[in-house]
Image (cartoon, rainbow, N blue to C red; front, top):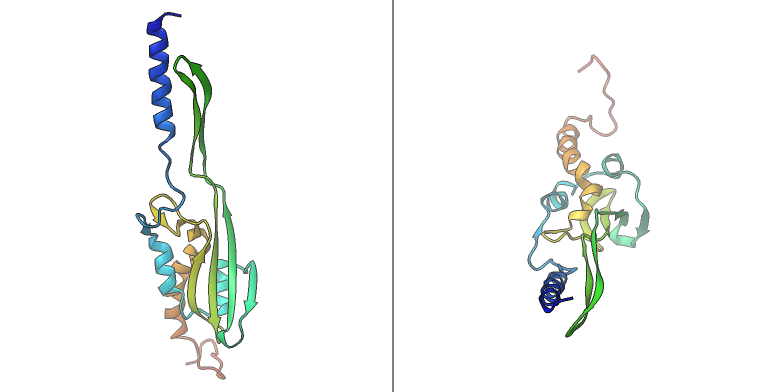
Amino acid sequence: MTSLHIRKLAFVAAGISILSSCVIPDDTSSIAKVDATTAAARKEMVGLSEADVRMCAGFPTATADVGSSGQIWTYQRTVQRGNLSIAVPTMAVGAIRAVGGSVNVAPGGYCNTQIRLIGGRVAEVAYAGDNNLPNSVDALCVSTIDACVVYAPTQSQSNTSLPVSGTRAIPGKV
């Protein structure tokens, strides 16, 4: 091999090394924006009944009775995101002893959506877990609550037209 070929290989190896050092940090919450759907769920879901939550989010993965603070329902979701993995073989070229590495973009994550129920109604919605995307906080939790964000306004409208407790609506009668 000529010295020109060795220099070219060294430059390519150095370029690959520099590119492989550009890694997105695991926690980008300081620069990312809160996901709009998860933020809306914190407001829209408040006041939904237990039955409403089961209708839009399904049955919880786990529940905990917290005494006078009500119950906490947890919805656990594991998300397999698409991966891009590039492995660069290790090369030994001249003065550069060993160059190599790998790039992995968007590894999988998980979200635990916690819903606090007091008196049978949603009082609070919170999220926990490895649930951030590079530019969006709590984004992996969307699949748990997106249907509830759409469902909640329809329930608040239909709840106002329900008969008063203890009375019964008779079809065709007012």
